[in-house]
Length: 281
Image 1 (cartoon, rainbow, N blue to C red):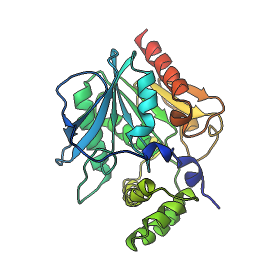
Image 2: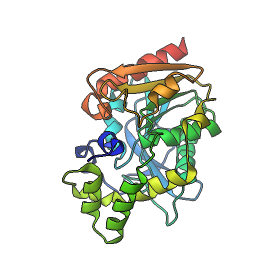
Image 3: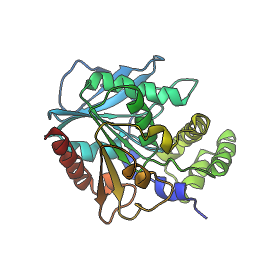
Image 4: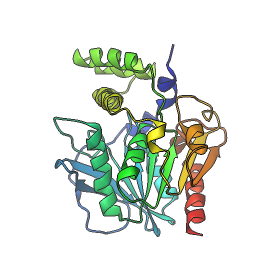
């Protein structure tokens, strides 16, 4: 039986096809606006790639989820291009970002902080799925103008058994089989290639042990995005945060689940734009 995490972490596999790791067209960000790729160095020297899209007045850093890359959020960023200057980052080991031999929960936070420094102190921060866990932690440590969380999976008890199965397959070099354990279906080569990142990511999350209580004191304006089909899913902390954060709004995406950023990017962009307008008033 598919676990709750398996069911609702699934992202658009098609969005990863064609995502290049080449850095031929990538340079250090010199502040130019527009739709183009850049890189920034994280604290450990790893090159973190991101794409700048739009030239609107509100800087927005976007952090994708597991088995994913920045490609799945390009549609949202393009739809926000008049309201936002979007910094759509690839997390380390994915897309245009580099990687390192060691990996910790802290690495992910430092990567986000590096992109936030480029975006500026008035930037908003958006995190999707497991990426929302890292954005929550980053928001505890550095100033952000506001926070947008799309279904952070902070109730992950029992998922360690699934990760162990995937770990064993990865250690045997069976990356496609490892990915298929998670998605319960055929895995493209692009998805299979990311299977090791799933293991290390969840090992790091298990070790760090983030939970809802750790983030209940966040006071910046916060938008909770949730699909109507997944609002009551107990894996996600949407309901917890809706009842506990001091400055919070919830936007329900009608008829959607955990991947509305791919299926209806304009709808997601509209809800984000409405939130930014409310904060500005």
